[in-house]
Length: 341
Image 1 (tube, one colour):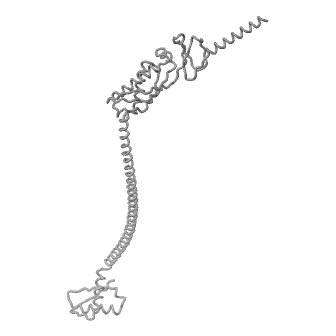
Image 2 (cartoon, helix red, strand yellow; image 1 turned 30 degrees about the vertical axis):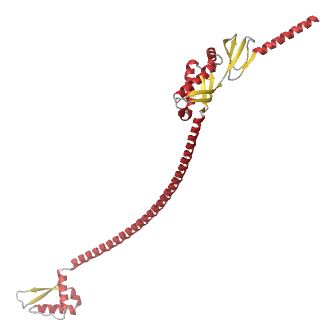
Image 3 (cartoon, helix red, strand yellow; image 1 turned 90 degrees about the vertical axis):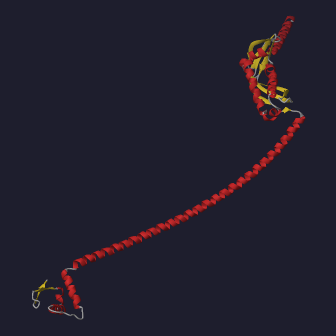
């Protein structure tokens, strides 16, 4: 019975010791971290990723590295004019890649950021201030300080600690002496007043420009309306001119048709007259004209000819279309008449 009790005590003791050793050797590495191990103060080449891991308790220790933000406070800086200013806070966000953890920690310990970043921030910030005036550092080039520090840090880290990357640098507004700060505040106040006046002037100019544009638009609208009305008048006049031209052309065609008809009638009458005015007809017309005279005087043998002709015309109308020809002999006293159809 006593032996059983002793065995139980030893088992319980061994389990207790084992539990303590397990609890001391078991550790956790969070996601995004890399674990490095030291044994007797010496860095081991072993690294571990996220999860639970075991190590030899008491003689082995571990540290985890991750994306971290290093903050440097109250950094003094002397400008080229001799004024000392202080940057209240400079933040550097950096990241050490897993493949470079062993080399960087071996060369610069687990507190590599103090050697590679903290001290470097002081140096680079003073380098920047020493070549620029207070006006440039405090106002004109303040927005460039972040990029300058990031670029300068990364250039050195690429050579000294490959795998350590600077993600971002944030610099607060520097503190300057009160007397100078008051002057800057006064200047800023005047600038603000000037800016307000300038903005007010721009507003007035914009309002004037708006009114001018409205006037231009109204004038353009009136001009367009006038142009449309003028085009309408021109179109109406053109329409009237075309109607007048058509009427003139119609009248001209009618006059030309009448003239052609008159010309044709005259030509036909002339042609008829030419065909009608034969020697026989002319002879008849001569005698008809003579017959219309109230008195006719004859001498010689002509009296018998005329008397005979008049007698025939008055007594026998059917013979009016008959033509007589006088055949004169050498003797004027003897006249003979021959009827010709």
